[in-house]
Length: 305
Image (cartoon, rainbow, N blue to C red; front, side, top):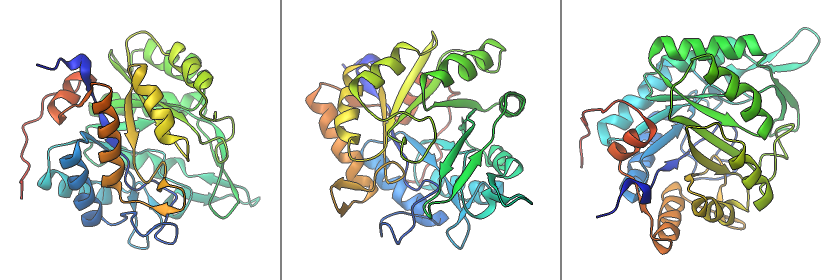
């Protein structure tokens, strides 16, 4: 019998806040499309769905109404741990242009993502310029007091944070500080994000040394997931598995399983599950994922077709 120590949480990130169908025909953007895609990925071994929302025009939003619609549709099809983004994207409802012409990710729009009924939400305590797909720079502005307010709002709503870290400084300051203030209890669900160095200021590229550095900087009591964007994804995630990581795949992080060949989300899940099998590892079920992450047990009300 396989123990939880040999179980890996596979997260599917099907949509993200950047790519459109002009980039890849396989990115799901509308609620039923996302739900159907997640169901296929759960059947292939995913147990967490990291969801971004889009407006009907496919631009980014953190609308609680749209998130709730997506989440309800997903749960009608499959039992899965649902994570909603509070970063959102750099277009649509998330983009605000200041009087001086500078562009920022709208704080109030990000906040709406907390009220979609997710099991977990991303907590990005990050301040950085983000390069949008059109080449413009957009400021993601999260000073300490805003990070505290976001963490407090999650605690009030009973939402367990997924702490995103793009560099060791996020682990050493924001994550360590906010957990020490009591906004979360172990296990701390930490997502180590590598490979976004071309679009996020101060983010790290994936290299074996960078991944080890990030893992060594994790706060005590952390359960960690690794997300790697770009062509090094599968090589890096295989490395991460040998370090005891859980892993995330999907079009949000990388649209191509092979260079120049757009790929469906389910194929990314199938591929990482095959790699795990060669390492003697198995995908965690949604109930096992909840146990590993310290989430409440949820009575599955999924309808299996």
